[in-house]
Amino acid sequence: MSDYIYSRKTFRRAERCVRLIFLSVLAALACSCQRSVGDAADRADVDVSQMQKTFACAGNLDGDAVQACRILAEFGSAHAFTRWPAETESWWGRKYCNDGRSDGTSFAALHLQAGRGKSPSGSAKPDDAMVLPSGGEYPLMTVSAATLTEWTPLLDAVRVGKVPELKTEMARNHYESLKRPAVADSAYMLTRTDGASFRGGAGIGRYYGRGSGEKLLIVEPRTGTSSCVAELWKVL
Image (cartoon, rainbow, N blue to C red):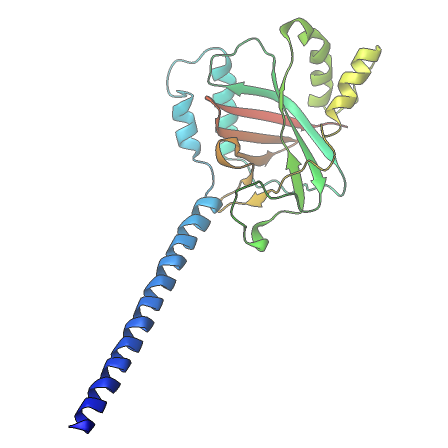
């Protein structure tokens, strides 16, 4: 009888061990699946066709939608951006959103800074192999309609790769403001995606970039209440 009781105890202990091992394996698999899904979402490139639907590019276009759909078509066939700078470098140009703005006052700037940027708060730690050699600051930039004529000559020069003629102190101040981040050490991490784009930002502030000739194209799937696209040129 004692041998029988001992055998049953031994069997129950073994059974508990097997159950614990089984549950541990299931938990590990569940965590692995969650990480894989999260990692896949972080690596996913922007859906260009969805952005084209957002801007109704298949319809009759007018206003900013004409420019936005042109940029989206170019973005769709653009290549990975590879011109990462050895020091701070700025890109600047026009921005077009689907919220009805048509006064020409929306601009975009991307300041690239050599070195790994800061991780956005609350974002998952990316695979080191996915982190790019430059961080980026992508500030919101608008100008008043009344001062648009002061910025247009600057944009015309930047588009053709020239330093603009800075005839006034105001023009010099405007131009200098394009060449530097708004805040020191403000660059956030940029990461590779599973497509041609790099990704910056997090949450509704995320944006994607690709290179196209001398331009850097940006797509913002959702920023606040509007989606936007931009085409930028290097500020000399």
